[in-house]
Image (cartoon, rainbow, N blue to C red; front, side, top):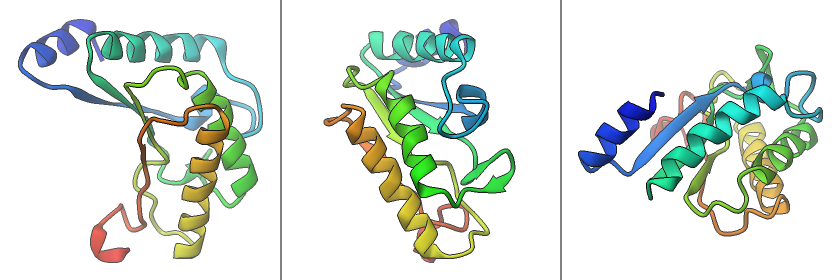
Length: 146
Protein backbone atom coordinates (compact mmCIF):
# COMPACT_ATOMS: atom_id res chain seq x y z
CA UNK A 1 0.00 0.00 0.00
CA UNK A 2 1.50 3.26 -1.13
CA UNK A 3 1.43 6.32 1.11
CA UNK A 4 0.03 8.45 -1.72
CA UNK A 5 -2.89 6.02 -2.01
CA UNK A 6 -3.53 6.28 1.72
CA UNK A 7 -3.38 10.08 1.50
CA UNK A 8 -5.91 10.10 -1.34
CA UNK A 9 -8.31 7.75 0.38
CA UNK A 10 -8.10 9.59 3.72
CA UNK A 11 -8.77 12.86 1.87
CA UNK A 12 -11.81 11.19 0.32
CA UNK A 13 -13.14 10.24 3.77
CA UNK A 14 -11.88 6.69 4.20
CA UNK A 15 -10.86 5.95 7.78
CA UNK A 16 -10.15 2.22 7.96
CA UNK A 17 -7.55 0.20 6.07
CA UNK A 18 -7.00 -3.52 6.09
CA UNK A 19 -3.29 -4.33 6.06
CA UNK A 20 -3.10 -7.87 4.73
CA UNK A 21 -0.01 -9.88 5.55
CA UNK A 22 1.19 -13.45 5.90
CA UNK A 23 1.86 -14.96 9.31
CA UNK A 24 4.95 -16.75 7.94
CA UNK A 25 6.52 -13.50 6.81
CA UNK A 26 6.21 -11.86 10.22
CA UNK A 27 7.32 -14.91 12.24
CA UNK A 28 8.99 -17.16 9.69
CA UNK A 29 10.31 -20.21 11.53
CA UNK A 30 7.39 -21.39 13.63
CA UNK A 31 4.41 -19.74 15.29
CA UNK A 32 6.30 -19.52 18.57
CA UNK A 33 9.40 -18.10 16.89
CA UNK A 34 10.81 -14.60 16.68
CA UNK A 35 9.84 -11.68 14.50
CA UNK A 36 11.52 -11.00 11.17
CA UNK A 37 12.95 -7.52 11.80
CA UNK A 38 12.81 -6.36 8.17
CA UNK A 39 9.22 -7.44 7.61
CA UNK A 40 8.17 -6.03 10.99
CA UNK A 41 9.76 -2.66 10.20
CA UNK A 42 7.83 -2.41 6.92
CA UNK A 43 4.59 -3.46 8.60
CA UNK A 44 5.02 -1.00 11.46
CA UNK A 45 5.87 1.77 9.02
CA UNK A 46 2.65 1.43 7.04
CA UNK A 47 0.50 0.87 10.14
CA UNK A 48 1.90 3.93 11.90
CA UNK A 49 1.44 5.99 8.74
CA UNK A 50 -2.23 5.03 8.62
CA UNK A 51 -2.89 5.54 12.32
CA UNK A 52 -0.86 8.75 12.32
CA UNK A 53 -3.48 10.16 9.97
CA UNK A 54 -6.18 9.34 12.51
CA UNK A 55 -7.42 6.34 10.52
CA UNK A 56 -7.64 2.73 11.69
CA UNK A 57 -5.32 -0.04 10.52
CA UNK A 58 -6.55 -3.63 10.64
CA UNK A 59 -3.70 -6.10 11.13
CA UNK A 60 -4.99 -8.90 8.92
CA UNK A 61 -3.13 -12.21 8.68
CA UNK A 62 -4.44 -13.33 5.32
CA UNK A 63 -3.77 -17.01 5.95
CA UNK A 64 -7.20 -18.69 5.87
CA UNK A 65 -6.31 -20.36 9.22
CA UNK A 66 -3.17 -21.89 7.76
CA UNK A 67 0.52 -21.58 8.49
CA UNK A 68 2.78 -22.63 5.64
CA UNK A 69 -0.29 -24.04 3.93
CA UNK A 70 -1.30 -26.37 6.77
CA UNK A 71 -4.47 -25.88 8.82
CA UNK A 72 -3.54 -24.41 12.19
CA UNK A 73 -4.45 -26.86 14.94
CA UNK A 74 -1.93 -25.69 17.54
CA UNK A 75 -4.02 -23.23 19.53
CA UNK A 76 -1.19 -22.55 22.01
CA UNK A 77 1.15 -21.75 19.13
CA UNK A 78 -1.48 -19.49 17.54
CA UNK A 79 -1.92 -17.67 20.84
CA UNK A 80 1.86 -17.25 21.11
CA UNK A 81 2.02 -15.90 17.54
CA UNK A 82 -0.61 -13.32 18.38
CA UNK A 83 1.00 -12.36 21.68
CA UNK A 84 4.29 -11.71 19.90
CA UNK A 85 2.70 -9.84 16.99
CA UNK A 86 0.23 -7.80 19.04
CA UNK A 87 2.91 -6.63 21.46
CA UNK A 88 4.31 -4.52 18.62
CA UNK A 89 1.02 -2.63 18.22
CA UNK A 90 -0.42 -2.75 21.75
CA UNK A 91 0.09 0.96 22.39
CA UNK A 92 -1.68 2.15 19.22
CA UNK A 93 -5.37 2.61 19.92
CA UNK A 94 -6.12 2.88 16.19
CA UNK A 95 -4.99 -0.66 15.46
CA UNK A 96 -7.64 -3.34 15.01
CA UNK A 97 -6.65 -6.99 15.07
CA UNK A 98 -8.25 -9.56 12.72
CA UNK A 99 -7.62 -13.07 14.05
CA UNK A 100 -7.27 -14.61 10.59
CA UNK A 101 -8.84 -13.97 7.23
CA UNK A 102 -11.54 -16.36 6.07
CA UNK A 103 -10.88 -19.75 7.62
CA UNK A 104 -12.24 -22.48 5.38
CA UNK A 105 -12.36 -26.26 5.05
CA UNK A 106 -11.60 -26.62 8.73
CA UNK A 107 -11.82 -29.97 10.54
CA UNK A 108 -14.51 -28.54 12.84
CA UNK A 109 -16.21 -25.32 13.83
CA UNK A 110 -14.92 -25.99 17.35
CA UNK A 111 -11.36 -25.54 16.09
CA UNK A 112 -12.28 -22.15 14.62
CA UNK A 113 -13.81 -21.11 17.95
CA UNK A 114 -10.70 -22.29 19.82
CA UNK A 115 -8.39 -20.43 17.42
CA UNK A 116 -10.43 -17.24 17.79
CA UNK A 117 -10.24 -17.51 21.58
CA UNK A 118 -6.49 -18.17 21.42
CA UNK A 119 -6.12 -15.06 19.25
CA UNK A 120 -8.06 -12.95 21.73
CA UNK A 121 -6.08 -14.33 24.66
CA UNK A 122 -2.75 -13.64 22.95
CA UNK A 123 -3.67 -10.10 21.95
CA UNK A 124 -4.93 -9.20 25.40
CA UNK A 125 -1.90 -10.83 27.07
CA UNK A 126 0.32 -8.63 24.89
CA UNK A 127 -1.18 -5.56 26.54
CA UNK A 128 -3.55 -4.63 23.73
CA UNK A 129 -6.51 -4.34 26.07
CA UNK A 130 -8.66 -1.68 24.39
CA UNK A 131 -8.39 -2.34 20.66
CA UNK A 132 -11.10 -4.11 18.72
CA UNK A 133 -10.55 -7.69 17.62
CA UNK A 134 -12.33 -9.18 14.61
CA UNK A 135 -13.14 -12.88 14.73
CA UNK A 136 -14.35 -14.86 11.77
CA UNK A 137 -16.34 -17.98 11.20
CA UNK A 138 -15.56 -20.76 8.79
CA UNK A 139 -16.41 -21.33 5.13
CA UNK A 140 -14.82 -18.04 4.09
CA UNK A 141 -16.52 -16.20 6.96
CA UNK A 142 -20.02 -16.41 5.56
CA UNK A 143 -22.43 -15.63 8.39
CA UNK A 144 -24.76 -18.40 7.15
CA UNK A 145 -22.19 -21.00 8.31
CA UNK A 146 -21.74 -19.73 11.86
